[in-house]
Image 1 (spheres, rainbow, N blue to C red):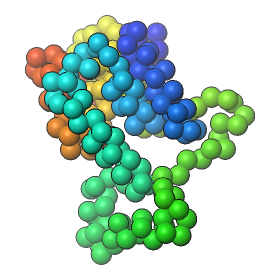
Image 2 (image 1 turned 45 degrees about the horizontal axis):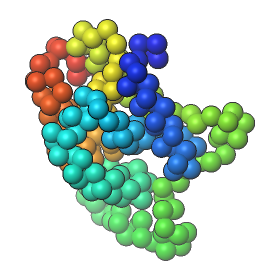
Image 3 (image 1 turned 90 degrees about the horizontal axis):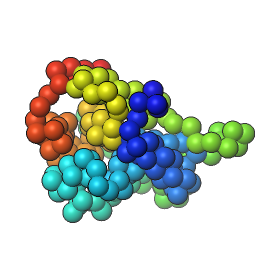
Image 4 (image 1 turned 180 degrees about the vertical axis):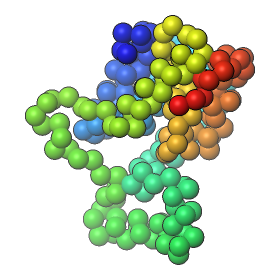
Length: 190
């Protein structure tokens, strides 16, 4: 699949690995893919982020990602479901951090990398890259670009898609900004 990646898409994957390294994370996550996309200048994704006002609110977006990391990767939907059962996630996070220190739930298994020397991609990050292929095929594109990776992140379920949506970056908004609203049919499928 990597051979179908454009220069920009390859830069995103390499940049995501660098983001994980800077964060001292043993794995490359969807969040690292998003941060790498935000750093990619002069691309269709950069244009979309600028058009949607994300670049002006990048600090807010990164703060939202940090807040999710602090909650152990729990989405707002998860938090609301637990609140319906009478469980206050904020109180639990505060209590855990009081006992074990700030960011205790963010956890990263640093022992997985020791024997390979490489940062593995999480299941969710791999899934996003695979979905980018399906989106490219659905749009009848011959290559996988950074724009397909961004669309895959926005179309998924989970923390990154939720944070993007909170900042007005939905699949539809991205598609309009990057492609003028043309839909390649099954581009969202998968």
